[in-house]
Length: 168
Ligand code: MG
Image (cartoon, rainbow, N blue to C red):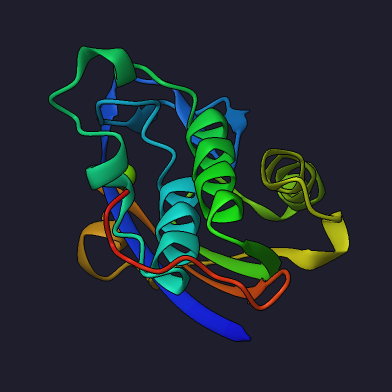
């Protein structure tokens, strides 16, 4: 059985924060604000995987009210999401992530981002796509006030025996 899921996330860009996208840190005057490292594309991807399995979202799994996740490495969160999904009998077939950002330039870092995501998800790098687009100067992303990301993921049941339910 195949299942598809989608995810979306947006974080505000502020001075004095690190900018981490798909597990790669950028040298940039602003960074993403959030409870964890605020890696928006990693969060969108984690939500896509959880969505495919109908297992809720990362806000549910890692509440921002829990000090345990403060400053958390989102590669660790993604890895944990994949562990939960695998424990329910699913494996990730492929994932596709689109980063919406006016800056920095993402292109040169795509191979490194794909490797980081693939490693966290324990899948082959050929199954992970990362791409980016600007918003042509429009809206909060265009004004460099935020970076957003969307993702989709396909999962399959490893042996046909999938344990359902939404309780994570
Ligand atoms: Mg987020």
